[in-house]
Structures are given as structure tokens and as C-alpha cells.
Image (cartoon, rainbow, N blue to C red; front, side, top):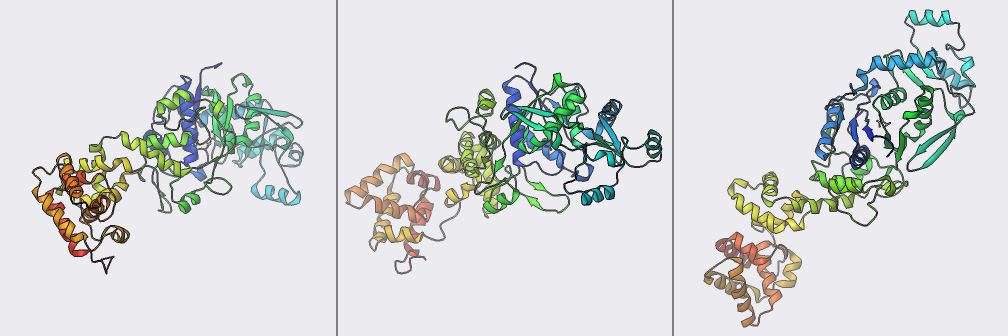
Length: 513
Ligand code: GLU
């Protein structure tokens, strides 16, 4: 690296952080850490019309939950603050003046109605070198008039004066050199007197320069702004500090064509926000990865792979692994389909790393939701249940599906299993099984298994049928962990009661009981 790596995540607080924005933040972070650099968080809140209360806190909390560490910025401090753009007006005013004094920008008074009229009169009207001469601005009006209008408090904007005939080169680490003609650019508004704030373009590049940003890593949607940013660096004579650009590929719909949207999430049932979002205006609630039971490590792992790969087929990587392997060499330029099914699968290995006792705590509210009071069971019991089934789940909430029978007796029996495993002889065999279970000196899994299997073999019973009928009686379905582990935990009395109940309730002519 030719200079100290300093990157920034620069969201606008216009709503909850979209999952695409989270990936941008993550790639910035991975790149910074891989190169021993710094990661900044700058809040770009210069568009007061789009400001949404709570959005900034939401962004900070999301990054914290995901473990995307910030070295400098809003909520963290640092030497280059303030990091909230609405608090940097004085700084921007100075740079606006610098451009005006150098003749690189000009003041324009055109009202929205005048601009509308120009658009109507001229198809494809663009405020640029070919039209600025006929508009109401400091290039066409006498200096005294300009001063008089400003003194009178007339609203104005400052526009960047783009010279036509230039080939503007954006050097993008992923896309190579992208050249565009300056003729197609319009004289963008850089500052509005109405709210005494710069627009995104000016604030963004002034801050990137002052904060020593070495790499601008952001979504592809910002690529069209990049030529203007290059020209602004030139106008300020800052080309030596021009950052490298990286415009990340779009996140695409999991199916079909086009950009991933919140509607895709609603349609296909996955969150597009890291945390649940309560919209302060509409009151609507949008689901989040955190509340849906995803572990932050899994979300990070899954997002990292949307547009990047480590150069081999490794898929499960911790944040440290990602930091070690990350570079733009293996970043794709093509849009990445949002493979949310993979996200579910990604949660599995991370869940397995968590201690069963900790998962048991997370399981308690779910038990309550299903009408089971966890206080009726010891922590040891719940932990043992978790230990037995956690290998089969992707989310803590799936524990109920896998393990409800440890807390409630079967209220029905799977009709398919009855058909396959419960014959007219089964009740008698189950009664015999009850006697065998009653006679066991030790009901633990290890001690109970062999004698029961021996009893089945010595009677020449069908092993699969007897064991599955046993399971059906105790669990309600032919699923679950090792049978004798289940019965050990349920205990002798409960196991035998369940077999009695099944014998009574499973009537072959009414298979669905
Ligand atoms: N404020 C812009 C955003 O909301 C920042 C774009 C950039 O990183 O330059 O994404």
C-alpha cells in the first residue's frame, strides 16, 4: 500500500441501514483491518428533508452488533471531528468560498419555477456550459446585482462550473479506468443558502480529503457521482490526495432480475435489515437479522461472500479469517444474487459453537411462547435437551420443532408412521416393552439399551418396527435423537405413561386419532 489505509463508512441517516449498506461497511472494515488501517464512521446528514430520527443510533447499534469496529467517528470521537456533517457547516462554507473565489463555481438564483420553465422549453435541459449563459446566475448578472440579492436574503445555490471537452478518468480498483466526457455532466449544486448546508458531493469530498481517506469503498450506485468527485479534487488542487475508488457490485434479487429490495424480503421471507426497525413515522415494523435468530458471526460470514471469495472454496470464516484473507483481488464486478438460503445455513455452524447452557437460556422465552413454563424444569434438563438436538437446528427457535416432546406429551401421532409401524400386534408388544422397562435395574441410556435390544432379538421381533413404534408412542413421530437418550431424560414413569397412552389412543381404524 502506498499510503496509510484510512477508509470510511459514510451512511446518510435516512432510515434503517439496508443489508447492502451493511456489506459496504463490512468490506471497508475488512479492508482496513487487513491493511492495518483505520475505519471511520461519518454521518452524512446534509439532506435535512430526508433525515429520519433514530436512524443514526440504528446504524451505530447495527455495526456494534455485527462486530464492525470503528476507530474514529460519530459515537467514537477522533482527531478529525466532528464526524456528523451537519456540525461541519463552517468548514464547508470556507471551501465553497474557495471555489467561488477561484472561479470554479458560481452563484445561481434560478427559482424552482424558472428551472421548470427551462426544462419545458428545452428537451433534455441540463444546467451546463451550453445553458448557464442564459440563466440567472453570477456569470450572467452584474456583481452588484448579485451582492444586492444576497444582502436581501434571496435564496441561492452554488453550482460547480464544469468545463466541457474533458475526459474524466475514474480509477476504480475493481473496474479499472472508467473514462467519461465532462460534457455529459451538469453543473451540480454544491451548496444551498436556504439551509446553509452543502450537498452530498461537496461535503463528501471535502471530508474525504480532510479526513485523509485513502480508499473510497461504496456501492455501485455512487459510480455516476465519481467523475464529479474527481473534478472537485482537481478544482481544489487535491489530486495528490485523491483516494482510490472501489464501487462494489449491487446485491441482486435472489430470483429473477434486478436490485434486491425490501419487497423481495417480504415476498420470500427474509430480513433486509440487520436489526428490527420501528419506523417512527408509519409505525411499521420491519424484521431484522438479529431478532430473527441469526448470530452476528453468521451474518458477517454470509455477507462477506456476497461479491467476494477467499480464492478457494472455504465458506465458513470467522471475522479474523475474513480479515486475513480479504482483498479486492477476489471481488466480483458482477452483481451478487442475495442467496438468503445460504444465510440460514451459515447460522448452523456458529450456533454449534455456543455452549448448550447458553442456548438453553435463549430457548426459555420460546418455551414460554408455547405455553411451557421453563421454571417447571431444571436448567440441567433444558440444557440436556439442547445438547441432544442442537446439531439439527439452524436457529434457536427451531428447537421447539425438534424438542417439544421433552416438554409436552404427544397430542397426536403421525398417521404415516402409524400406517408403517403400528400393526394389530403392536399393542401387545408395547405392553411387553412396558414390563421390560419396568424391570430394568438402571434406566440410564447406556444401561437400558442393550437389554431392550436383546429382548427384541430373542423374541425375533422386527427391530425397526418395535423401535419405531416405541418412538412413535413417546415422541408422536418417528424423529428425534437417540431413543434411549430420550427415555433417560424423560424418566421411567413418563416413558411408560406415554406408551400406555399410545396403546389406548392409536386405533388402527382411526389412524389420525
Ligand atoms: N452518504 C452516502 C450514502 O448514503 C455515501 C456515499 C459514499 O460513500 O460516498 O451511502
